[in-house]
Image 1: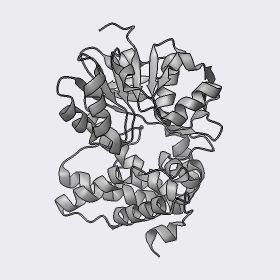
Image 2: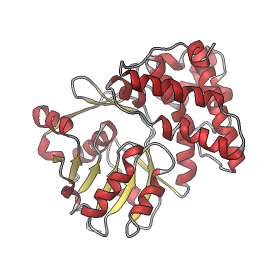
Image 3: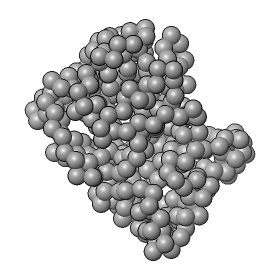
Length: 334
C-alpha cells in the first residue's frame, strides 16, 4: 500500500483530533471527518494540541483537512475509527459506501465489541482492533489536551500497520492478542463512570482511598465475570489485572508510590465520560458497565454495583446538568 495515501480519522472528537493531529505534526497526510462544531473551531483557530509532558503543537486547518463529507475517505489507505461505540454501525455504513476496497480499518474505541461490528459490516476490508490507553479532553478554549501517559496498541498484521502509525510523541505498539488488551482496558475504564459521577479530577479521585475502594469493587465484579467467561485480560500497565484491585485498596501513602511508577496523570485529567456529561452528550456506560452486567447475566454472576452505576449515569444523562458530584456513599446507595 502506498505510504503517502491519506490517513482519515473517522470521527474526530477529542481522541481523534489528538491522534490525527500528532500524525499531521509528523508530516503524515491526514484528514479529519468531524462534526460541524469541530470543523468551525479548527477553521477559526487551527488545531492546538497540548500534553501533560509540556508539549504544545499548533496546526493550520489545511494540515488536517477537516470535513463533514464522508467522501474524504475515498483515497485513504488507513481509516482510524474514533467514534463512540454507539455510532460504530453508522460509521461502518459510511466506510462501506465511500472507502477504497483496500483501505485498512483501525478501531481506536472504548469497549470490546466494535471490531466485530466493523468486520460484519465491512467483510472486504482488513479490520484491526486498537486501544488508546491515555486520556484526552477538549478544553473550553478548543485545545485538545492529552492528560495521561501510555502508548497506543494496534493489532498485529502482515503490513505492520502499528509501525506505520507510530510517530514522534505518539508511540504505537503491536499485539497478537487485541481481545485480551481490550478487556484489560475495559476493566480500567470502569473508573470512567465513577470519575464522571464524582466531578473530581482523576488524580484527586485516585488519591482518596474511599474512591479507590469503590473502583476496586467495580474491577472485582468485572474480573469475576471474565473468570466465568474464561477470558484472560491483558494488563495496560506493568500491573496485572488480578493484582490491581488489591493495589487500589492500599493505604494512600503506599498507593501513591505505586501510581507514580505505573502511570503519569495530569493534575486536571478527567474521564471522557465526565466530559460527555458536562457537554450534555450520551455516554458509553452501556459499553463498559453495561457489558459487565450483560455478561454477568449470561454467566450467573452478581454485579450489583455495576447496575447501580449504570442507573446513576443514565440519570445524569437525562438531567443534562453535568456531573452530579456524588459522594462514594451516594454511589454505593448508603
